Length: 264
Image 1 (cartoon, helix red, strand yellow):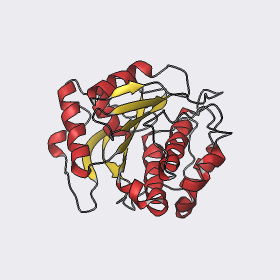
Image 2 (cartoon, helix red, strand yellow):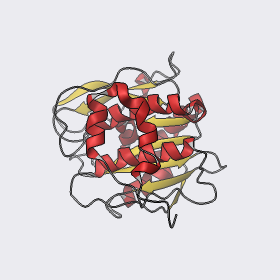
Image 3 (cartoon, one colour):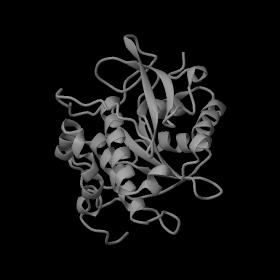
Image 4 (cartoon, one colour):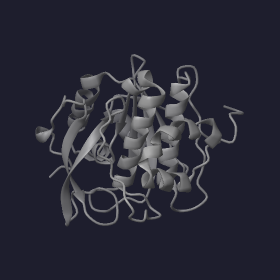
């Protein structure tokens, strides 16, 4: 059974979200429908202009290694913040939930992945798409997150891969970009100094890129490098504990979260 049954997808809902029924493994680790013990959940491709209010937040402690629900929850908060800060960019930006990105990456039929992706982008005509990348396989949970940012403004889409652990997810990102019909360009990314902050880097990278898009920057002339990004786990904990503060977070995760833009 594939991670997502696209026959049960409901495109074009009232708030322009795309809901896909997914089978996500319960317990620790990233989504892997091929493992026993998974539970049925509904994941969303978040349209940043019409983001819903159903956020997965609460008082449960966040583990060192972020899971799908933490990525999805912060994407939802970012969508709301982006809509408040820059409605135009929000209308053109889609944040893809981890389970959907994993399906695009892992489905055995590349043509099915391409069709699903085009169904997603054709529904709302976004210019920018963010996909969390995980190295989970068909028989094991994942150990590393990275980010694929796809610019759809050009005739051929261009994908940029931000990996806080060197080239660990490079082959996966290359394969995913190819499935989406995008050319993969190199980009500089800050590197983590521990074995567990990759998910935080993904979320802060997404926020930094979204803020720069809102400020008018575009990757047309040169990639939007993030080699000066500073990941802030405490800020993530604060966001998920107090989602009402999400509007402030887009601005605070822009240039203030990067040491400098020198050498960009």
